Length: 231
Image 1 (tube, helix red, strand yellow):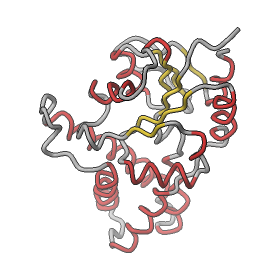
Image 2 (cartoon, helix red, strand yellow):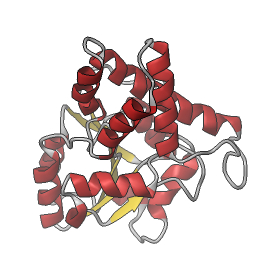
Image 3 (cartoon, one colour):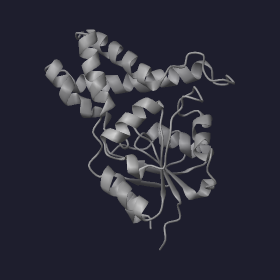
Image 4 (cartoon, helix red, strand yellow):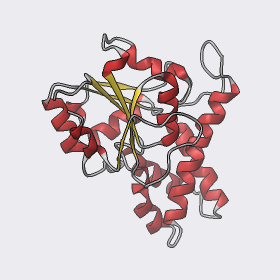
């Protein structure tokens, strides 16, 4: 049976790239604290994107508090180091931010995206990340030749799950909404895409229940390999 989707739209951080792969470097810098730092850093990063968007939800030119995701990530790191009582020196922050530029891709990402492209599907990234950091992550993971478009939120100046972010999927493309499958490992991101009206695939890497606020994803799996079973 042929696949019903023409385009697969992937979240980047947590879906293609392992945001917790910084744990090893963090552990070397701060023995016994690597895991706690990696988790708090990610949680604060996501929280900051929400605060920025909610401060100006209807601003015509985006939030006046907007800053690129790279800057959000750095500020979240500074907070996390301070909260855990760890050395927040510029040198240590620079080292961890350099790791964030080249996050490890999950093991199945390259073979799955290679197969999807071979089958003729469009592969798109839609991320809170700004273009510079996304470009470096894609290149570092060896995915450049597989991606048709990389969509960041710089021009919008808002973050997910604001509806305008999902609108970006349909700029400069004639793929209809029903032919798009949105793929994310973040339950809140899948929920936002569900509310927007997209078909969704939740990559449930942690074996969690789905968010209780709204409709469940149409599909789910514990990694990206489940996409290859769709047709």
